[in-house]
Length: 137
Image (cartoon, rainbow, N blue to C red; front, side, top):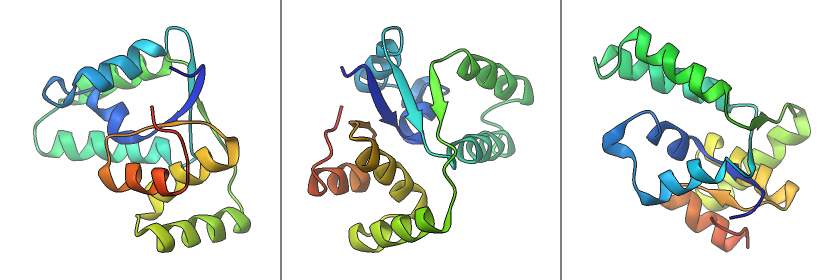
């Protein structure tokens, strides 16, 4: 695996739920022992929302969410802080072109701009990354 890569929330949240983890997501997590991942600025909000929804559905307790956030804080994950009109224009254009949500387009945009491969479980994002010639882990 690459030393640095973009990881999307579909992979990250699988680490929270045993029934969503698989060999691929486990390998991505294991790779963080020797590499680090980059995420777009939207990522913390996506994580928080996924945890809230899981709490509301009684899939997680508040304590489970706090434990997971504590574990995430120990991983070599860097949140990119670019937020600008240009970024919104790029992300909107990518979302339109590849029929992605703006959230997924932000991961693709980061991978394209940084020249990094992407780790994702999302089928649409994987297809868009292939079309954009972004390497997939």
